[in-house]
Length: 204
Image 1 (cartoon, rainbow, N blue to C red):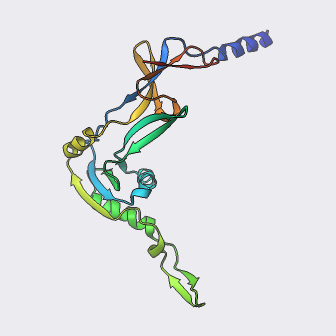
Image 2: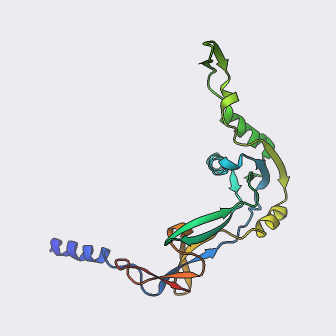
Image 3: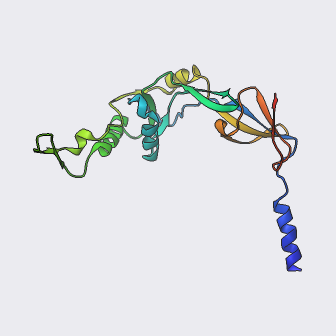
């Protein structure tokens, strides 16, 4: 009897979770600047924006990196293309009871501070003592602000909102996931008929 129950349960798990009423399409979500934060702008190396953004978020800061993204199809593959209207600048939010300049520069100093000085040998064989702080990559070079939330919101509104893939069912959105994982470009719809069958991309 227990064996039959296990078989029945296994068949239930393999039942497809989608129907022809499910579909995926790309949408743009409006960026809303958090009014509960004081906002600053930091000047960073444009090549390290993403790395600096991750570090700030891991340290508890709120960040916004303005990027105008689009999905394009080339030779049968979909790629994400991004234009940065403010390359080299990151928006950083801090709690209102703290001074953003002090918090950000304290974070900056923790990143660039080395544990111990180290010794290197130059081309002439001489030993040189170096300060680790002089060679550590700085996360940013300037802190500006604070700026008003409405001022930053107006700037964000001038940039096209980021693209995300939305799963729809009977007129409701069940969830979102990164657009690049959908394999779609704007204006296309992915009908989900069976998770074990080949999915078909149709024009919306």
